[in-house]
Image 1 (cartoon, one colour):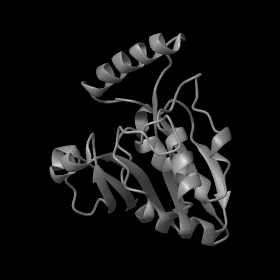
Image 2 (cartoon, rainbow, N blue to C red; image 1 turned 45 degrees about the vertical axis):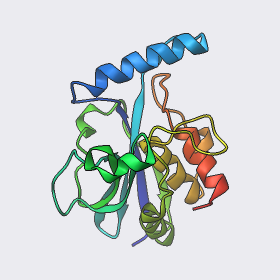
Image 3 (cartoon, one colour; image 1 turned 120 degrees about the vertical axis):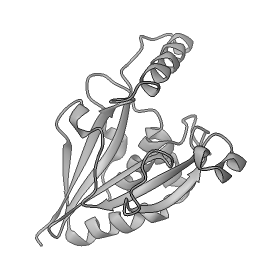
Image 4 (tube, one colour; image 1 turned 135 degrees about the vertical axis):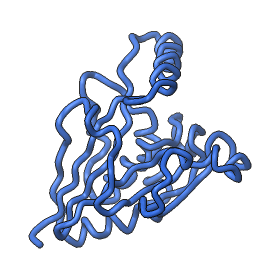
Amino acid sequence: MDEARVQLWWLPVGAGGHVVIHTSRWWECVRARLDHRAPQPLFHSALIVRLGGAEYVIEMSPAWGRHDPARGVVATGPVGLGWLGRSRLFRYEVRCWRDGVLPDRAFAAAAPVEFRLSPSAGAAMLQRAAQVPRHVWGRRVPGSADMWNSNSLVSWLLHGAGIDAGTIRPPHGGSAPGWAAGLAAASVSPP
């Protein structure tokens, strides 16, 4: 086992769906107007870690989306408001799924960005997925004007692996809402 390979996948928000793709576009149009800028394509990020002959899919998504009991759930958190998290409909899950599925992989906006890590750093990243802060999805993170979401998990994990996630940008001039929230969370409670 010479090294771990980490792939950063940029997936269009709502790819393969019907509702999220429209609501996210409306949200971005309103944000762009308030910020006096042109709307940008929105991206969701996920990681695939290849280590020791296995492939691990790491992502955050709604808890109600998948029902495979072996999907590698390592953490959960609330969506919208903390108390709403008592219902599965308002909970997200963090998956670190060995030989798992990245559902929207076919819709990727570009080839994945690849990073190489030592085997120990790759193994540490897999362990850290379970230690991610359980901030409320869609709410601001202390020290940031950005909201916590799936991109926050990815930037938090990359930062914890010693990768300068602050310099990473999504493709096609797009935006990754939540990216800065993950960096802010990493500075408050380092991975």
